[in-house]
Length: 125
Picture (cartoon, rainbow, N blue to C red):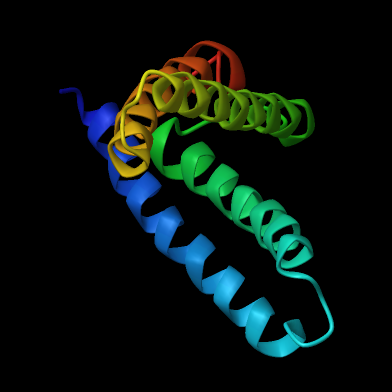
């Protein structure tokens, strides 16, 4: 495994924790007035922005202009979410249990996202 791939995994685990804490914090403050799916969307956008800067600075060490790069990053992540949903549906239809299906999907999406970020989001690094 390359140094960049290890940094990608480290930042991914860290960002997962941060995303959870963002969700938790927003829910604690606004949970009585906002639906949990609204809380999810807000926390997802905030955690994606946080993840972008971690990937940009620590993993890919990009020096490109951030605007278009950030949009490419969002596209790769939204593609990953869609891929995850499709894989989950496919695996469930095959009779695989939910948690195992999600575990396999996460591994596949993580690998595809790494390639997407390397070849598209941060393509010049």
